[in-house]
Amino acid sequence: MIQPISGLGLSAAQAAGVKEAPAVQRPDSGAPAHPQKPMMDEYVPEEKREPSGRYYLGKDENGQPKVYFDDPERDEGAGNPEPKAADAPKEKAGGKKAETCTGNTDKVDREIEKLKKKKEQLERQISSETDETKKKGLEAKLAQVESELRQKDNDAYRRQHMVVSRRS
Image 1 (cartoon, rainbow, N blue to C red):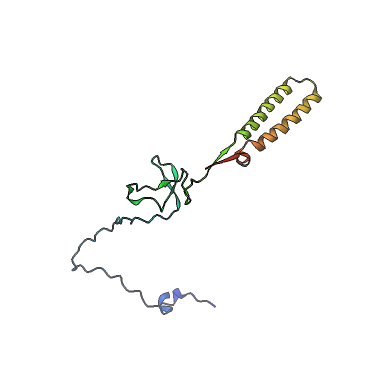
Image 2 (cartoon, one colour):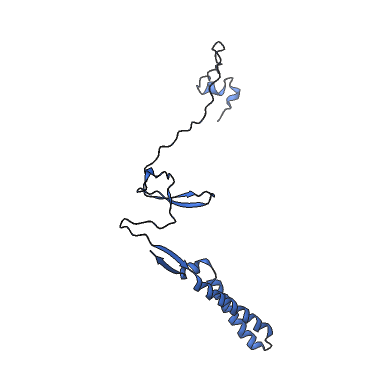
């Protein structure tokens, strides 16, 4: 049988054998009171790093993201502390310029435009057609053209079917 400890005359802490907590001490009033110096951050300038030949993301003068190249072969005494932008073709070790690739989606855009015109033409034919059987056939063709448009009129299709040309 469990007995409540409140009726025993002892406190629960004394019954469990726990000593009393020490009293909170107040700071000496005799010690000279001086305010602590406020903690502040300190600016430590970073040492100039040696160029590592890596590409990294930075911001241009307009705040737009830009890729930079930390060129280890750049002339340190030229007075140009900014790294080169990675947009321009670089010269390779052999003395020739790197290749530049461009993507052209004109062919895909023409194909999509052709499908849109075909869709408009079918819609006009359907609206002017009176024969129900011909109208249903035109609607089936229209559904097929719309399906093809949904498949091709997006960025993923353009990227997959673009023509890439290289220049050196």
